[in-house]
Length: 270
Image (cartoon, rainbow, N blue to C red; front, side):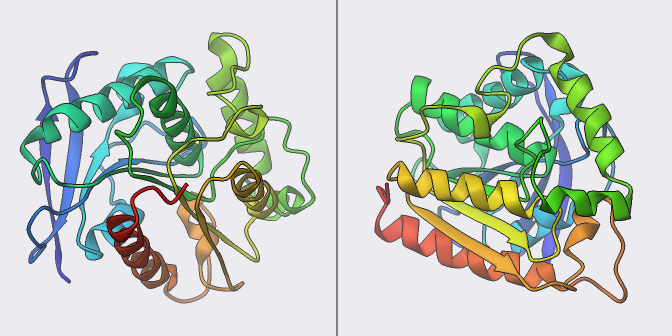
């Protein structure tokens, strides 16, 4: 499916106008699902005018993807980053922003640092807007501020460990480490929306991603978890490089399409 995009301003969001890039397939169906997508960047990236291959991959599955610039208003600091993102989510839940229709399913998705914020939005949605969120898509979410897993040692090889250290310090500079800020430390995760979770065998965030998925399952949350093979170019989503063109996009699109069908048939997977 060919994906088109356009820039727009979400000017009726309660917290203030938020710019967004909207991705959608040229031939998406009636009542398409809507995805609030939150970009990565180690809590340091504020560049909104860049391509978002993950967002494009989700749009190829038939969704309308709202890649919201949560960074500009929040400075990538907690709790502002979560507040901006949740405010956009609330707007989409109530109005659908003229996208899709009232029957459109609503998802939140994020990669790396954006995966952290997406997980936080899912927790807050459970607490403040039950049943408004149909699913969460976590793509190598950056969840553990202590960075104590064995797989994260691999981050040294691609120069990410120091960047993540700086990013966590920046993100948490606004105050204490609330469970919404580091979802892997949250003691109560039951009742959140079903999750589609991605990592790869050579992903430095592999262990914390798998660990969070396991905790969600233990809490009774519906989880679809996929570990892609090494060498798919997966590290490129947070700054790494690979030989040849990455081929993880097709995997993300295909598995997200399957997740959409599952949620449509059985909304209360959890």
